[in-house]
Image (cartoon, rainbow, N blue to C red):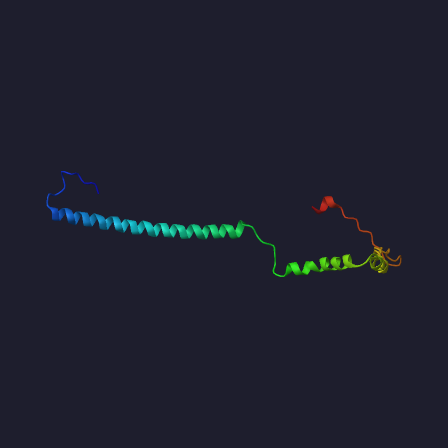
Length: 125
């Protein structure tokens, strides 16, 4: 709404009513703008949360998982507190690890009947 100074009425009551109407329009536009900003911010926050959930840092820690892995450390601490002779006895009592022999495939018995089949690949395709 543009006004030219020459086109404005000279009556103060009309000017007051025009000013009040203009203030009402501006307030209405400000409210709409605030609502749009609020909606924009909500959508932006939801988008950022989704992106952070998908691509953000992921913690691989599980509750109580650290306690499971501390068993080895506790055993090492116990061994470190042993004297040299106790360590030697502990090492001597360890059984050597034997590797399992890989199974060997035995040949088929000679008594089984055998049939020779020749497949010609050029005619099957």
